[in-house]
Length: 64
Image: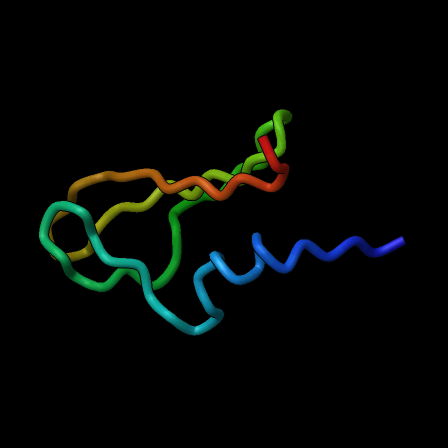
C-alpha cells in the first residue's frame, strides 16, 4: 500500500534543484553518501567541491 503525505512532499526539495553549501554558497549536485536512520530519517553527507567543507542535511520521513 502506498501512503502519500502531501505536507512532506511539498517541503521536499524538487528533483533537479541543487543544494547550496552552507559555508560558501556554491551549488552541490549530489551527496557523497546518503543513509537511512532507523527513526525515519534520511541523512545526506556532502563535501563542497569549491571550499572542501563537509556538511550534513536530513529529511524526516515520519511526523513527530
